[in-house]
Length: 378
Ligand code: SAH
Ligand code: SF4
Image (cartoon, rainbow, N blue to C red; front, side, top):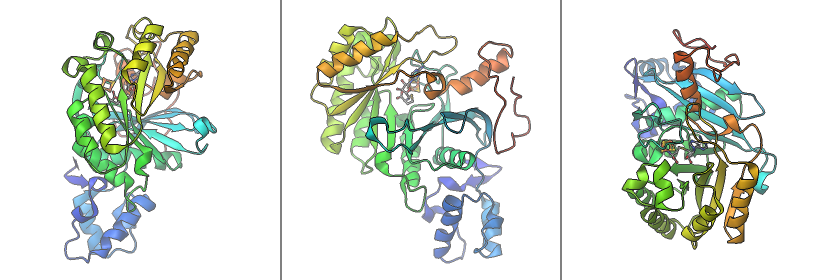
């Protein structure tokens, strides 16, 4: 990824950084400036010789991503809309832990990152694909979402989920490079087991992932326990029917010996009946799995609705009666917590209809000045 002919340095492995005639130990110094001090300006890298600083500045960019919109607040879920060097927009969501949730540390911070601009898979309930697919994100653009969110929030991110815009397994090379940098001790130092890749079910890529060494987590967007239900909402099911997807999950588990998460959005009158719950339990029997039930977040312009809380609770109860581990989030304030792609969608809608009822009312908050020409908030 180039910006004004300069390569984004955060997408490079150490050995890829061109030092000219400088000794190799300079790499460690540069990485420390980039990832420990989060320095964006090569001229500030005081222990490097000036000619090297100049050379790096000519060749590379160490800038973070400008945040053009922000929603939420410091102690709740925060959404950031980033402008990429190409002018495209993607978003990330910073999610603090609910205190003590699932017995986990209460101070953990999860960043939900995007892997593509738009999405080609066109799931009917999802905001990300509404505008079609535009391009893959580079490794640098993925790493920079994390670094930029840390800089703006002043909080260390220790968990990453690839559940923002895009299908990460369709961009596997760049995603794996980004994960390697996020995980590396010289990079962001985020434990691999704290990094989750979510997929709508790219079967061949799941088996590729099963055969590579990083010990990351896998989440499958299932959303339907049979072909008829799943096909209504996920076009990918025509290419890879449920049986093929589940076989890929079993193969993944045989290789990785790691628990898989199945994400299951509950949508009214589509996939949330008691019979759907029983079918789901049968489908995934024998897989070491957790089911994450997500009551649907409404998307402006889409017809789907979330079922009432009793329907959701009953669904979870049936799974538990079948000895399936599941979690469900029913609390209020869900509207910014999930459904990545919505902020970008909202911006798109605001521009088309500045007085639309769903237009953002909150003023932009960002430590970075908005780029020249950034659209005004309504
Ligand atoms: N493309 C990948 C990752 C991004 S989507 C995938 O599909 O897995 C991340 C998760 O958000 C998926 O489980 C997706 O189905 C879910 N999601 C999308 N739109 C949603 C909505 N409106 N409400 C709740 N979850 C949604
Ligand atoms: Fe793409 Fe995932 Fe949204 Fe489906 S759910 S359109 S695969 S981002």
